[in-house]
Image (cartoon, rainbow, N blue to C red; front, top):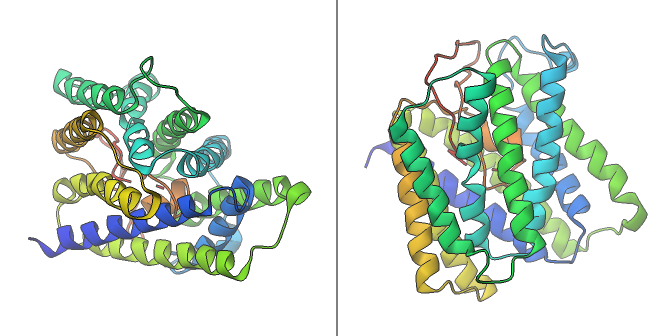
Length: 324
C-alpha cells in the first residue's frame, strides 16, 4: 500500500473519531456550544497551516468578499446541521446522506461554473443516491429531523464547495480558513448565550480532544496529498462508512439491518467510482475549512501549496473527499 494512501486512511479514521465524540455528547450540550468550542479549538491547527507570505491580520482582504462570505454562511449552516444530525440519528445514516454532497456539487457546477459532466458521472451519482434511499427508506420508516439536517448539510456542502472552486485560485488561505471559522465562533457564541452552561471537565476534555484530533488529522491528510496521487487518496474517505458502522455498534448500540448494509455498500461503490472517473484534486485543508474538525463532508478542489494559486480546469468536478 502506498504511504500516502495509508496516511489518508489514518486521517479519515481520526476524522471519524471526531464525529463519534460529537455524537457522544447527545443532549449534554447544545449544538451551538459544541459548534462554538470545536471551531474555537480548531483555530489552533489552522494557525500552523498558514502559507509563507500570508498574514492572519490581513484575512479580511478579499477579492470576492460576497462569495467568500456566502461560502462562510453556508459553512455555518452546514456545521450546525451536521452536528445536529450526528447527535440525533445513527452515524451510518448521517454518512450515507452526507455523501450526497457530490450530487449537489455537480448540479451547481453545471449552472454556475458552466462545467460539462459526462453521463458516466451522473450514473455513479445516481447509484449513490439509490444507496441512500436503501439506507433511509423514506415512506417505509419514520424520518427524523436528523435526516433532514444531514440532507441540509449535504446541500450546504455542495454550495460551499462550488463557491470555493470559484474563489480558491485568487483568495488567500488565511481568508478561506479564518472567515468561515470566525462565522462559526461568533454566531454560535451568540446563539449559545441564552442557555449557556460551562462544560463539565469531562466534556471540556472531549471538546479539546476533538480539536487536537482534528488538527492532527489535517496534518496527516496534508502529508497524504504529498505522497500519493489524488485518485488513490480520494476513495479513502468512504472508509468512514465502515468506521461509522463499527463505532455505532460498539459505543452507541446501533446495528444496521441487511438492507442498510447493502445501501451503504452502494453509496461507497458509487462514490468511489465517481471520484476515480475523472482527475480530482483535493484541498489540503479540506475538513477544517468547511464544517470544522467534526464533519462528514470535506471539500475537493485545487490544492493550495505555500504559494501556489493554480487555475481550475473545466471538467474537474468536485466530490466529497470528507467534514467536516
